[in-house]
Amino acid sequence: MATKIVAAKTVAAKRMAAKTIAAKALAVKAIGKDELVYSHPTMCLHCHLIVEMFHERGADPVRGSWQCPRCNHKYLFSHWKIKRQTRGKTEAA
Image (tube, rainbow, N blue to C red):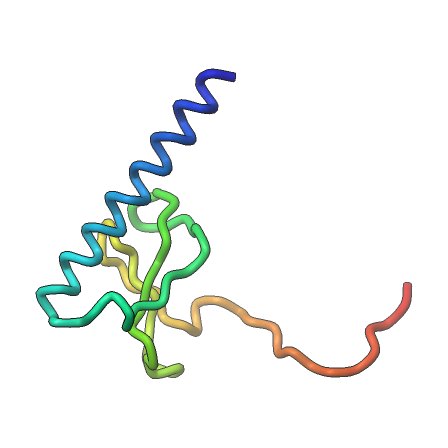
């Protein structure tokens, strides 16, 4: 039980460190914090860590990408298959 708590604290510390690294990297590009959109915690397939990916607000839907704050690996928006939201009745089982 104690190892789970320690692991959770370690993950939280890594997330905070990743956010600060991302903010510093984007500060060089002169992009404000309000102009970033963060994802849900997601595993980066390049560095194998669970991070909150980010992209600039108003990014191009076709050529835009989520970026890992740790290794700066980019995932195009088309990487994820997103279901189209439709209105209507769902089929009953």
